[in-house]
Image (cartoon, rainbow, N blue to C red):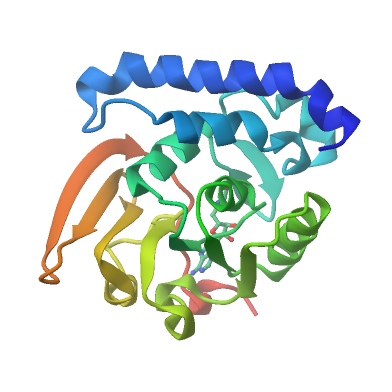
Length: 227
Ligand code: SAH
């Protein structure tokens, strides 16, 4: 942590408290009750201002999404916290993230898991995120430029998988790459999306739970991109 990171700590702690308050307010209507102390602690620790563009740093600790360029956004802290909490990550877990973006959610996951593997389709975003991970000294993150629909078969299976852009339906490859006993969190849908929690049982069967309506950028197919 640098001096400026420490200077931002009160703002970060206030953001974590706001996220906790919002969770308590929404809990009666959500399929999820409260955020764990571990998740609230990493939320108060990860320097979010280093993940937003420098001209938008003043917005870093507000509970809202912020544009990060290339038509993408850094997700709202509340949603990052909720998705992370749903994954119920243990200290020995290996986690796959689809859609690195600026890398904020990756850094939150890295504060909880043994290792995080993260895939981003847009090369400049992936490269910028990798630099940020280096700058803040994250050593348990592996990045890759590629199509998240395919997952990361060479590193599978994973204890937890999170998708931070919305596919029209749950990609089969990701279900296949989830360990029995593992959890997958994914926003699914077109115009109207639902955040879905998938739990894979020991016998390979799956249970799906709808958590909350959400609004994510689409998980694009590589072929959808111009060029
Ligand atoms: N995880 C980020 C949010 C990223 S926004 C955060 O913490 O704020 C979603 C990201 O998914 C974008 O960067 C977008 O480029 C990426 N994306 C879209 N389609 C993809 C695909 N098929 N494979 C991998 N990444 C994809």
